[in-house]
Image 1: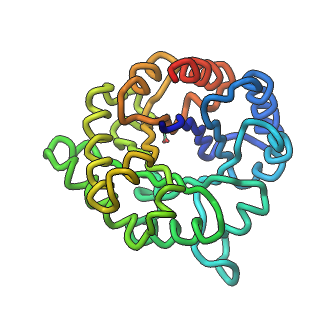
Image 2: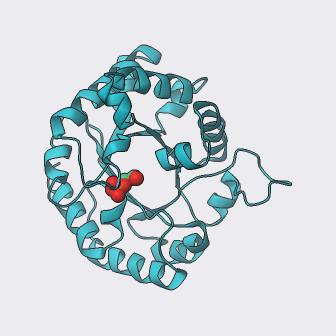
Length: 254
Ligand code: PGA
């Protein structure tokens, strides 16, 4: 059975002091949750100190991006090894905001994915269609393109360490969540693609999270669906009460 994974993506929010305070709160509120994986992805500047807060707890740390080279003259970039050094277990790759604002492509996602896996980080690879693509009935084409090309050359052993996040771009930060049925339709499609790329046993072991305006009010409906194995949460992960209440609700579902 797949274990739920709920990851908070703090994006470009929180000073170090605020990040430590929120992480301490999360740790205190959720110390006894064992039935699912909890991840917080803080800005780079807060990783190391939040890492000290959550060390030896049931909360894991994640980065929001990485660069694929190990080290060198790449001003402004952070490597997989640096994320590990700061205490990260996970890393988000290919978030739609990176695709939109920073020219991320399937090709760069693939390079980052390989680097993360080689370094022993657990990747969360984001895929998702834009509103105009959904309206043009191109959702499945876009998802197929994102999944097949982002995962190119990834072995069966490595794909099992990878989480896929389905994040319809039109639902991110807009308050417009996909309905559980809309999300489940795409999650099932992704699992079908993974079956073709790997095999049924492998595909059924891979976790597929949903992301896009997940809140304590809609988390149970979404996670109640067969192929939805968790959530990647932006806005609602920035406040202790909403993040902890959605995790408590999710923990009771399995
Ligand atoms: P949101 O963001 O929950 O604020 O919609 C989700 C995400 O971008 O991962």
